[in-house]
Image (cartoon, rainbow, N blue to C red; front, side):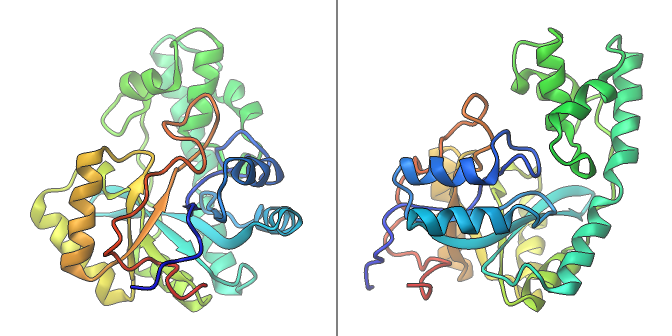
Length: 282
């Protein structure tokens, strides 16, 4: 296999446009300073930061790939699909992402009500200043407020106690379908990748069904090395990529210097026998 000239690739991270804390320009600068040579910004359900990110990457001589992380509901759970290398001006993609974002504000108010019932009033109003884009107010913004207000020592504790998928402050929402997300990405000329599969609480049969449907729809990739995978999970999904014929992707899922498990550019290398999602982007 021909070795890639890109030795440090990070294709999953977030800016203040969604639930990160840095501007797209500052995320680009951090990626460059950390030795990343191919980078994608993948904000949740939003492409509004890509122009700034791309311009900043060009100034730094950093190879930039357009990206987005789309929220999908599949088998009653939320799955994230990363799109890479697409046209961010594609009308169907832009409209699809707008529709996906539309339910967040109502959900956020309901989360605020639930937290108030648990003795933490004013959480909705408190979370809003943490959201650079009010259309994309999320559980992470609530978590940052609850830490600042002294209810929890850190963001992870907030999710463990109040806002995780099975916790009392969580409010379910119907996101895009898998077919919609993959269709928007492919229609805009991009590649669809299943983000951090180790985070999903599916049975083996459900994972098989998810992979089958994703591949049938035209999805091509799976994240192997991510900030939320353990070493065992990385090995497991490298094996899934081999058996299923997935292209392998990787990304730190960086949100904040204080909150993220891995900084930009700190991922271990992918196994050399895997075909990467960027194999023909040389």
